[in-house]
Image (tube, rainbow, N blue to C red):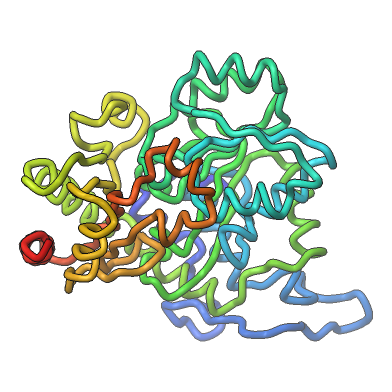
Length: 385
């Protein structure tokens, strides 16, 4: 459902958040139920079983569709569960062209789980000229991109890729996890499907694992919905309620994390113990102009290379106190991690090297703490290296 009457901030709070019609409770009830009573066999009030439908999950899907400006939304038990539904929906033997720098779990899913049912190839999606040649030759049924990528933060031209995809009638899926619908709306740029790991910014409080798909194509949505009910990766009512609660502050959280991130990036760029910094909001980023054109903000993810190698990286990571050394991202708290050892360990070492994921690469998920405290924590850690 497209509801654009009000601003993003207002829709984040009110779409799917109507007060309870029975009690008037300002916060909608959690329908923590597995099944629903029928008045007669086959006669019910629209709900039969919570794997198929649940009122709390429906509210969340209505809100997400509005924020992403989509006709349809489907939420799942994780981002990878949502990604799996897309793969299941493709005919056997389909060709998938995927960006070469993606989340390690996505790479593992494609190369270790669906490798016998589909044919996958990986390419640099930031170079439209070489990508077009690859697409015309490979003729994929689907092009999968992350933008910004994880962890190198490369920016792909969504509208440009959509134009190329149309030449071979391929669908375009955009993993929009890093930007959230607040900073980037791929469907408005022509993408067919938007995928989110809602574990990250959409929920924003590091207490839920969840995924979502948003799209406008009715027939493909019905296929995904059928598969979700048949395969079973639905999102639980309580988790749906938690995400619905988290969304209410999405706009102010994204603004706050981006405000902190640019200051952290500028600090790192000037630091004597930092080799280089990658952040779309910096003028030094090779696709800074595209980032400004395609998004309304640059998010809270920063990648930087500390001078040295694994020894220096490990010492720095062990020395931070406010930044939490943990996988994942997008929570209100700041996180730090080592992709080569942690989130991208499932990617072979030679491929990591080709992508630039070296032992001195460190990834930050900047939270919404006070900027002075964040910079002080980084400073004291650098002094111990």
